[in-house]
Image (tube, rainbow, N blue to C red):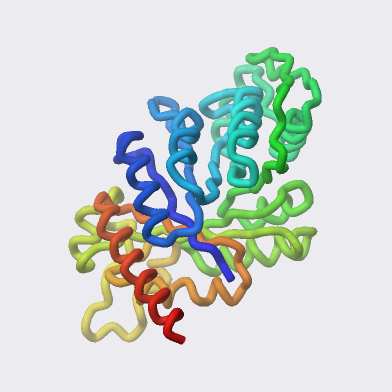
Amino acid sequence: MSSIAFQISFRKFAPTQLIQQVMRVEQAGFNAIHVSDPSEKDQREFSFSWLGAAMQSSKIPFTVACTPNLRYGLPNIAREMATIGELFPGRFDLALSRTPEFEEEEGKKNISIPPIEETASFIRKVLEGKQIYYDDGRINDKVKVHSSPKIPTLLFFETASPEEAKMSAKWSDGLIVDADDTNIAYEAIEKFRENGGANKSFSIRLTFSYGDNPESAIETSNLNANEFIQPQKAGDEKPPEEKKENRGKFKVLTSIADLLQWIEPFRKLEVSRIILKNVNADQDLFITAYGQFHDSYKAVAAVD
């Protein structure tokens, strides 16, 4: 059965607010936390420094997604992973991602960004306690940690590209794919499975805005209105999701029942984890609604 993860966002909430959010999410019945480290160069929040406090406040597992060298060097990422993995064995994993535009920009400065599979290999060797030399033209470092995680930390790959998913199947421990365009998500999962990832973990991420009604869900979101699938109008022959112009746009949800209906096809694919990314500024509304559903479900299951 697929576990359900809640994605934490640093864009609109202070670190102290996010700690409270983590505790509420766990109480509401979510099975895991997914943290997408801010990729903007001027972003002040640093997810790894927040992570220790967040994990100490809860008991559920965390996955952090980051792009190596975009905000900080690969040696520091490896050291952070070793520290968090040793403190919280079996509860912490990392999802690597790529930013081709950044890699091209750094290449013009004679800075060498290692391929993503080499990045993963470097991190694994460091976590095994080996001493590794690193030199990318900007950072020259001798990396060795003295306290390796007792339980190996998994390295996933996060992408929206079927071709990148295919290439990652051989070196990654699992795949995380954005499923806002369902057809592309299915293709990415199929390519990952066919090229060495059949017995590995794979997760999908669904992005939406949750509100009391469609209008408020869009108005209080962190995105522009044109990035969402607009509600169905009277006389429309096709559901909005089936219209070509809405491919890749985000859903608007007003009930947990709608959410469950949306994720059901992915459960049938035996997805390991479904990550829910609510881009609404009012996260409490969604967390409360999910918690009420979860409590009702547990009560019915207890009677049965």
